Length: 73
Picture (cartoon, rainbow, N blue to C red):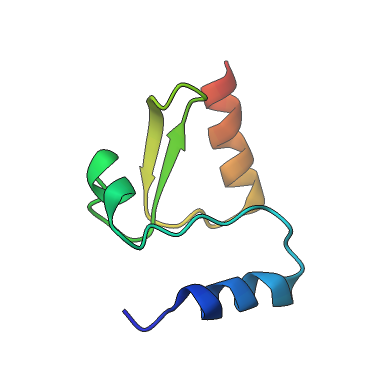
């Protein structure tokens, strides 16, 4: 509740990331993809279909890469 679009954008910029950010300020994504936990990762296909979800944080890059490889099989 304390994060703002501005502070989150600044945090990402300070880390040097260049990927696009999307903020669900109206909770439309939360409802559409039934987000119940934070953190939660939702993998969404190019067609808007939920492919996979993961509750909790990924603890390493390899863990995230393995999840992506599982989806791409």
